[in-house]
Length: 143
Image (cartoon, rainbow, N blue to C red; front, side, top):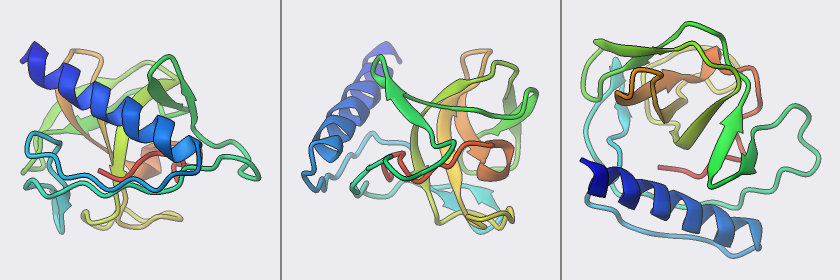
């Protein structure tokens, strides 16, 4: 478990560093987080990188200390991959996130199908709805 978490954290940090330097990132991670499905979070898929410029975005998520930080709703649920089961809650604010996916179930808001991969305050990994995050999540790397 610790080895997998470390690998995800290292990949996320490396992708973010390359993206911030202006380099496009494309990677495939067999152990990466699963992408959300039409009804909520679900199965694994290859990750794709993106350019993560934060200039010009008001209230955008920010990168600090090897994590992406965003302002979020206190008490927001974090969902188990592959289901709509709540595995924990995010009582902290701001909170850190690993990556984002726009292939999930409809949640509304400016990014109607976006979910973010994170670790709930109880230590469980899962997906948070983009609508529970008040910061602009475009800067986060794509899962």
